[in-house]
Length: 131
Image 1: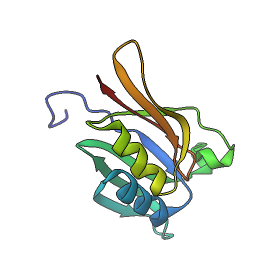
Image 2: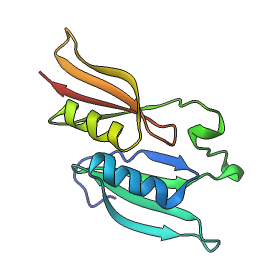
Image 3: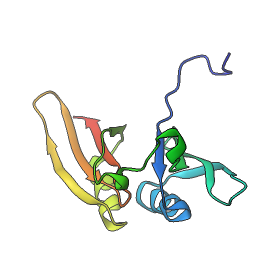
Image 4: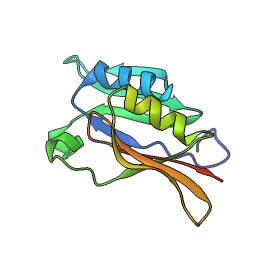
């Protein structure tokens, strides 16, 4: 049983760019690398990162388990939603670090302000906040 009292989700993102991707998430989102485990061949087994307490893991592509980065197919099948206190600041920081806009920041009638980016490794992130 987990030492946590409530379930915690940690998205597992697959990459093929090692330290370059870790550096991007630190610069773009203010991520903190919590720990890193390497494989015997020098690739990443996992890098555990956190953005404002929201944890996620980075892994090198693993073809034998059919775990590929979005770059493999030039597509992403998942959007990672992250609630933040300032959507505009997160979007601007991500763009300055090399992300591209998928959907510009706007207010929605259901009470959220949202925007989406594609990071340089093909992952789509949606930043959102209640308004």
